[in-house]
Length: 306
Ligand code: PSU
Ligand code: MN
Image 1 (cartoon, rainbow, N blue to C red):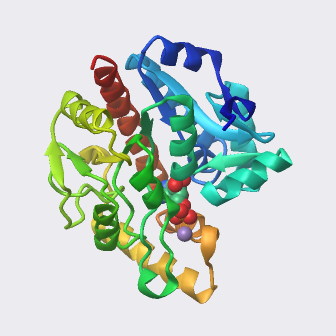
Image 2 (image 1 turned 180 degrees about the vertical axis):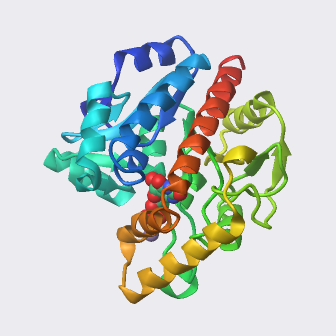
């Protein structure tokens, strides 16, 4: 193995890792595929600032010119945000080809976890994770994010999963792969735009210190796999259940009619839900990412003390 040949860790990030300072990884598919330009770039830069204000160092992760990058400059974030959907959405199966060809890739939860782990970063903040899609019993469309959570030791802070997925099956899959699902301040799995889903998480935790202690114990025992912290969207930014569920049902029906499949499914559904809810969902999306960045930075700070 010769990781150094492929991985560039930004100097600020490398120094923080070496000196045991808290670092929070961030994904880039949310920039290229998750939001329109220029809100995507503004949000990405603001998230980095929130992490700094909370006492940690941000490391936005991507593949640029075939290099695995942990820590991007504002110019690199701007470049990815402008290129948008023209950047390859890079999951685990894409990594070898993108690197050998010297191409760009926006990292999903899967590849962000992989590169964070290669760099020595333990905590990662995002919006929503991929999961088991509705109808997966026949399509077998299950996000690689769940496999990665089962095998790579990174703590992922998200706002739950959108009900574009089958949330019940997603929890079953995580259970099978040994991934603890934590609710921050709640026993109910949040559903991204809303605080409620009707499904229970495994454990409720109320402080970043509690989360850090659990992750640390897993690490010390050498347990394989990550941990998923689900942080409900702040009440004031949550969306109305009816509105969001109607949009999601319609987006799923359209995806079926148009035969959308494979890696295109999630970006298609996310874009349709956003259009059908008239941009109201974009605001909520941005706010919940900020909220997750804060919790991730606080947890990384607690972890650095253990
Ligand atoms: N779900 C969201 N927002 C996102 C994604 C999923 O609510 O931005 C992105 C993430 O990058 C996630 C990826 O890792 O989509 C999952 O894609 P797929 O379902 O194709 O594995
Ligand atoms: Mn898929």
